[in-house]
Length: 167
Image (cartoon, rainbow, N blue to C red; front, side):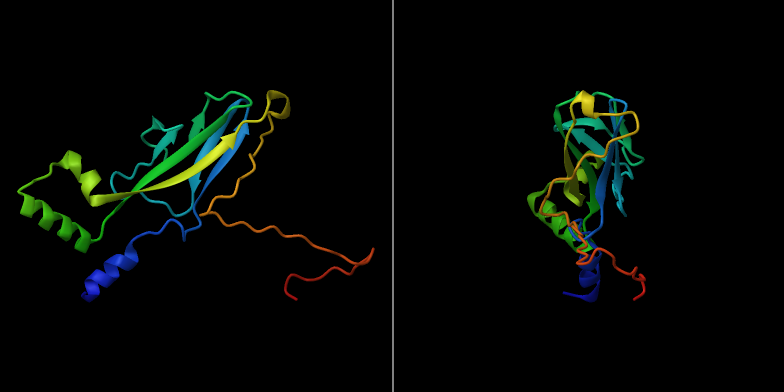
């Protein structure tokens, strides 16, 4: 393995280590969705969005407002971004295709030279009496690739001096 191959493998994005997440807010019987973090699509620059495995937007890179929601229903949203494979991986694919006598066109380049990464969030829309026009942020369930912190402060006395953030 040469130094270029090592560099290529280090540059491959690993979404499980990143601080990327789907931001969602329900306002006026619609849901606003946005994929947050340092997320780039290397294929077209556009981010695909699926709702219950149906493509609802070919470019949700600036977010998406879903107007077709019903109270009490649960929806699964999936953002898909494509990252280009390393030069060594592409060289290996081209070698294998050459051995088979195959050539690929531009339409097939996405499936051969790019790896999809999916960001999924399942959202249960509250009953209509719990929704308001000021906005409601759905609670986030635990998923293996999500990290959260539950911070609680216990003060043993009725009165405690304020502490500085620095101390």
